[in-house]
Length: 326
Image 1 (cartoon, rainbow, N blue to C red):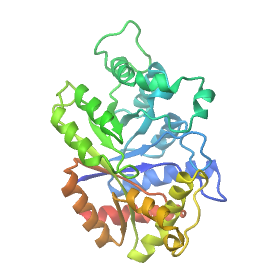
Image 2: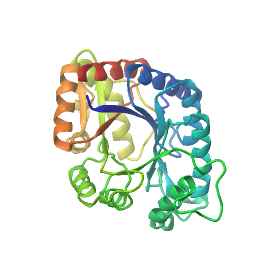
Image 3: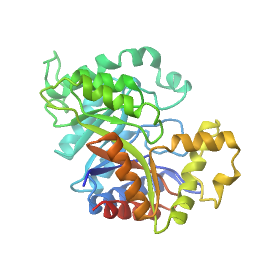
């Protein structure tokens, strides 16, 4: 069976709170660990009322203390928002707390709109241009290859598994050039999936950390006892995506029966296009759609996303998904 991992946005539900969202994330990680998932990743987003994972390293410490064996990591840290030294210290600390369990996935996007640059006191456009240099510097701070004048403590010598994330060809090319594992965000940006994976594999250069290409692809996966129940549960996620793309993001809403039938054709087409990399349905449906996706992508790992309004429905979804693939 292909290795499965979990991507969580630490969603804040309508009528809920940030403390509840953080508690739900820890409970979900425990569920994923018990079910046999390999990794539990949290994504960095900012200034979004419905997502509580902005302080990603802090959230990972919370999740690490709630679990014992599952790998924990960022999917990802948006490096243009940060100084590489600070990230080396943060993830070096995580490695000291949870040795052999920490992943550091790096992305180039800011994780919010243009107002974030002012809030962070950052020139994010220039920082994005510096991204390749900052990735190499961050890896050197952690590994000592090459040795830098100053050593981050904690950080230096940490056994952190670094990943490149992407939703375009840029990340694939950079991951190939510097010999890193690569994860593609096909759960929300499927257009360049095939081209990015092909480019990554074709141009990959072995490094001392990775001898051959290793690719992960993301899917939206919501499993339930029936196709109808899964579609209903997924309507919360559909509402969030439509709200985001129409400039009105908010908290995760309760499911709405027949939600897609209420959408205008242009919005429905956008939603269905984005959901190309998805498996929503009964265990049999999920198994068939994941099998087709793996055959298409030849991915070495899959990471599944897909928030539900009822946290226990996502627990059930993770359990059904991994059982369906055994």
